[in-house]
Every structure is written in C-alpha cells, then in structure tokens.
Length: 348
Image (cartoon, rainbow, N blue to C red):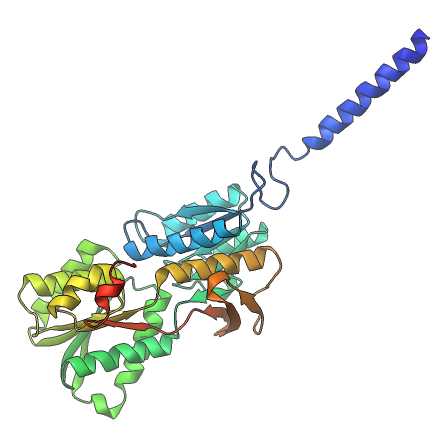
C-alpha cells in the first residue's frame, strides 16, 4: 500500500513540475502577440518632438482609436525633432515587444535600419503625417493630397498679395517628407505663367521649434524688406510668423497663410494678420493611424493597393498607391477664415 501511495505522490509531483515549466517557457508575460500582463496588445506612436500642439492632438486621436479597440496605447516623442532621438525610442519599443509602431518621421531614410529591425522582430510599422520611405513601413496615413495642398497654398497667397510680389516659405525641417512634397507642388504651381510676377525668394526652416521659427521669420523680414507674403505649411511656423508680424506692426503689409491649428491661429485670423489658412483635423489623422495599425496587426489589411479599412467613426478608407509604397488618405484640407474660426477654435 505504501509503495502504491509513493508512486501516486511521485506522479502528481512530476505532473505539477511539468505544468509549471510549461507555464514559464520563454520567461515573458507576453502571449507571443506582444500582449502584456493584462492581456492587451500594445500599440505605440512616435511623434516628431515634444511641445508641439499639433502632435499632441495627433497622439490624442491615436490613443482614442487604440483604447476604443480595447488595446494599450504608448505615446512617445523626443525633446528634439531628430532621427537619432526617434531611433532610440524605436529600439526601446522593440525591447518592449509592442505589436505596432506608428511614426511621424523626422528623416525618411535615416530611420530605415531601425524600422526594418522592428519589422523583422514582427512589429507592424506604419507612418503618418510625415512619411518614412516605402521600405521602412507597410503603409502611410496621409492627411490630404500633397498636390492639392501645395497648389492651394500658392493660389491662396497669390490672391492675398494681389498677384505680384516676393513670397517666402517657412517650413519645418529640411528632411520632413510631407513639407518637402508640399513645397515641390508649390514650386510646380508657380511655373504657371499666371505667376510670372510672383517671386519665391527663400525657403526657410524653423525645425518645428517655436523660437527658431520666430528667428527665421525675423530673418526673412530683415533680408527681404519688400516681402509681401509668407507661407508656413507647419502649425508651429505659422503661429510663430503670426506673432512676429503682429509684434512688428506689419499687418496688411506682409500676408500670411499656411497650415495652422484653429485654436492657435484664431487671434491672428480675427485681427486680420492671417486672412485665412488651412488644415485637416490632426485628431482624425491619429485616429485613422490607430485603426490602420489594428488592421495590420490583426490581419484585416496588409498594406496593399485596393484593400479597404473600416476606421471607426471615419468610415471606410481605401489603400492607394504612394510612389514606391502605399497610403491611406484622410481627406481634403479645410479653409479657416473669419467666417468660421469662432466655431473651430475651441475644437482643436
């Protein structure tokens, strides 16, 4: 009897040991899909830099989508808008075994090795707003058609300055793919003979930093005393230019347009420093990226042309060609002026 009991006890202990070993295999609380201890998939977004209201709204939209889907959102942004700082964050996220990384690229090519490393680790990578190159991502989420943005901005400043005079562009960083695409289309629009009396004198870069954007605006005004218009296709830049024009009493002498946040630009539109400007809803850009990330992670899309994605409250979106890669387009830019700024300035 004692012998039989000993065999039974030994068998039970062996089975317990096997079960314990099986539950701890891998030494990770992840279930192989990047899920943490709470069982939630982890979705990260990396913006260009901190202290950028546009980026904060974009990350807010991303977080809303991810949490709406029942996942964990990780929001990251470096202090300075550099590729090196973003690479450090990508490496950290690879170590955390996140399911997806959505990135607003500071440099399309410099980020490629780190993003390829992430994809090899099984992480679904996409870009939004400012694209990384096609080899570094599965799909890009774009705000609006770059051609329509670029041409619209030139058409707008042309009307503001009365069809002739010197204009300048105050951009973000020289490596920002979205800014560069818009500027290319601005230059193409200027090739039309109807702009023969409009001269683009300078493309300046404020690096999406407020103080540098202020300094670059001041330098433009000093270097080109006959400057009649500034186009700032960056929310940080246009707000900085609006302040400089206001402080120097140049309202009506130097026209201003570009892409800005209604909340930041309301005072300049209401005073007439900026007659009108354009933008899309950055919250929606982030929200769409969140649903695109979910689609990639959970096999709803792969990033190929023709695939369709249901993006929550934004409805169905189709993946289209984007150079060597693919993209999902949010929609057309929206015009903000004195007739509608009051209703939008409290929205974003």
